[in-house]
Image 1 (spheres, rainbow, N blue to C red):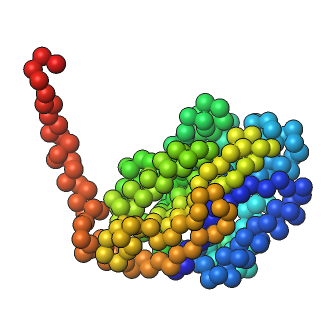
Image 2: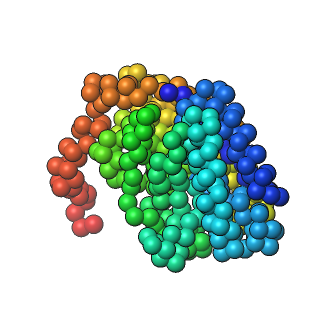
Length: 299
């Protein structure tokens, strides 16, 4: 398959039609390049806060609720575009006030669409300090495995990718392809997610797709500065790039990054790689029960 990872800038939108036009152009560009799977970033949906005007977009709670207000139309649009272009799309994540599952506070939700419509949702599992202390966005309930015509897909949203047990649980459930949408203000934050995504690809011998928000959006509270580059990773082993990097864009440069990926090679490397990280994972258990402290006496 051909994968497209977005380095996505937020835009001020004067109308819903502006948003439809923007997303249509992005999807059309990737589809015309032959992409089968398109991955948008975390909190890319926050640009919808501009539809409430400058005061709403600059107010944290107002912005979150304005974005959530457009969720039904956003999902309908992505389903329509996925069908029209015959592609799978992970839409940009955003806040959702799902009272039945999360109470009165929003979750951070990404949705996966295929040519037949909505496949399912993934809510972020691990909240950053900013989400916990300022946004009061809450964790979702568990991880989803998406069985698609392209392969078995899992999603770890931004900070989630920095926790190896989440990636391991998805690998043990059979995923071959990990999607990592992100939004990070500083280079350090982007690097943490990048390292996390690459590590998950290494230790679980799978492909990881990293799609960040990039550029400035001074009118959108919490999203004023965004740093990143789109990248597609694999395990640096037989059948994969020796650096573990299929493709990556320039830092801060908006646009799609593409890579041709054969998921049959995931099965091959898991069965007969130079190393067998996925298979050897359980052997850690015996070692971590025997941690010995060694040092000068009296310390």
